[in-house]
Length: 330
Image (cartoon, rainbow, N blue to C red):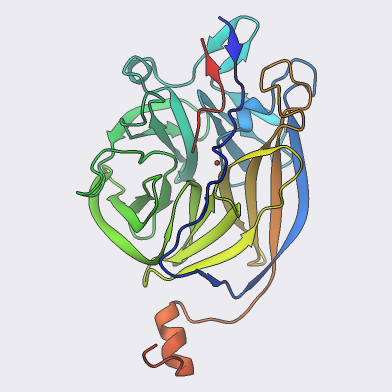
């Protein structure tokens, strides 16, 4: 097999379209460090490929996804296990064979809860087969369970599986269409049947990954601003949290992970595909890599659990890059 187009450039000029501009979150996120995962460091490892779609935290480990599989690492990002392989011998996918045979050949951002990895899964042929597949976090084995996702009446099947986020406390899973819109899809976690939508007070598009923290859904957008947003799951209020820096040759924002430390502080991790050479997006490009931006919440402005309570308490305003398959194996 020949491998070409490792990372496909996100469409130029993607812009955030909002009904109302999202407010700025009352938080102080500070950039702590940036990890760079190159294809050929160490030589022949293709490390960056295996971390090019999604990320989640599982206790003291990280779980990464790429188009065809999953990887476990320790807290220092040393690889512990992969359920797929790409190299001179070709591709060995970690996607279960029965699902792969259906054309389901793209894993997006993932989430981990209760020892289970929830992996968004779709077909690169139009992204019209949205699924979520369940894997065991301990060894990356397939549980045998997968579910077809349904969308809203306005978009029943289209572009739903760029990511999935899990809200175990409420028994829900979340998703959102790739296209611009102000709704979040809510699924019953037990079988990923469609439950209802949450209407946000602003619109977003090109969401590549999301995670739940308390009453908030944090989302990474591959829009022109490379913005990180959070939406309140109780009120639908949307805020911009921060914007990811744009290094020379940045291509596409991918997944996002959130972790709460023992001291209560929050860590945020966001993946960004970078190609300084710009003209060579193949396996031979020595400079092609994934940047992992690590932010820490230095201080939080005290706030009620919901934006509605905040407004009431202060007496304010009475009336007032898609997910393209990161590479293609032929």
